[in-house]
Length: 474
Image (tube, rainbow, N blue to C red; front, side, top):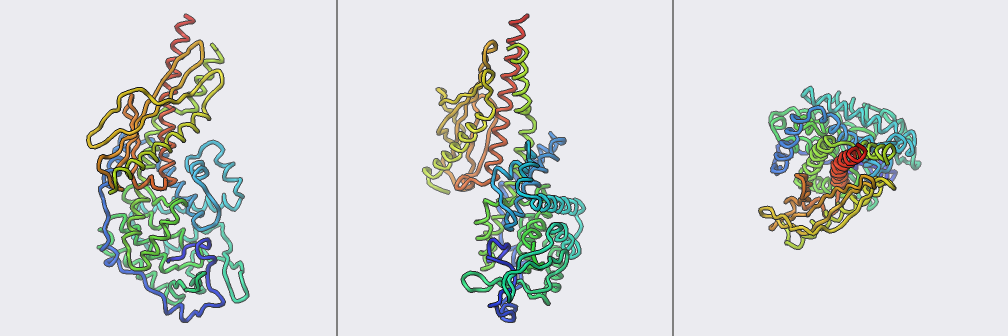
């Protein structure tokens, strides 16, 4: 397994019990791109999601920068957490990524070191996007500069020496001076490029990235290969995982403007797919990078749609002012996936509703609607749920939204589940595979969609309540 972090390996660098010469000889050079490109990329979702994002870009050009910023910030905050530099959870990542209220305070609670690391990681992703925009060839000097940007606030790294654990100065933007093979807990050694081979391997690596076959390949093949090959070399004393994830994002940013979005809740799949690649099976890691890029594309698209709706806070404030002044599976498996998604939807609806209710002004209620299920081709509607927003007297207006979960009649892990709003055209889609263990990206997308649902309903309620109060007072 490729060791990317102290959290994974139990430490970085050499161990006093490690035979360096034997470890150097055990190094297995990274594969050529010709070997890597024998893996395949399933492009049906990539093509559809990419077209969808490009359509939104042309329709809502002014909203695109903010949507892409959310994805970039999510990638930047969690890349340090994957390295074990600090801890994150979905709520924290969403707060920082969306720059929600008090995001700076939430970051400050982690300590000044975490803020400095996040700022450096964010700057590094800006650096990556700049290179992606220029579309210039990757060079060793650029990779060393990327390492320097990512590790700017980090002066030392923890290393095991013959006298035990020590903090040593981190050479930023420079290749390693000492071996960084890892002696794992089971007594086996994971070997990276020997110190004297590192410059040669990095030269060969960059030559591969400049080859005609690499430049003509699908962005997912490019990103996964760049990440894996650099991780195999492990050219720096520390920060190799951060550099690999940022470097991979160059190629997805060039193609579709989003980085590879690897959040901490996907660490298990991340490390297992890297381990498979170490064993010679590259396809799982290619598939992993594809899935994480699809997450990024959909997160950007959903962020744009949500931004087109009025702000919940503005609608609540307007309503408050009104009252202040006037008063591949079995069908059972597919069904279970739909139930999991719908339950998650209902839970997030309830949490958001609790946060926006205003005593004497606004109430939120839930019920199972007594309406006929809307059938779609090749889909079955299973369950329904509805929420209603009510304004207090004298307006006494109610606005409702009903939803149903639709599942494919013959489903695979890559088929889409759909939550459909009955009265409007709003839908939320998620692949069956995403619901097995709902990822942070899925939950963030769902939160954004729920924001839009409440925002639109609140805007309608506020306008209707205002009109009724005006007519009464006229």
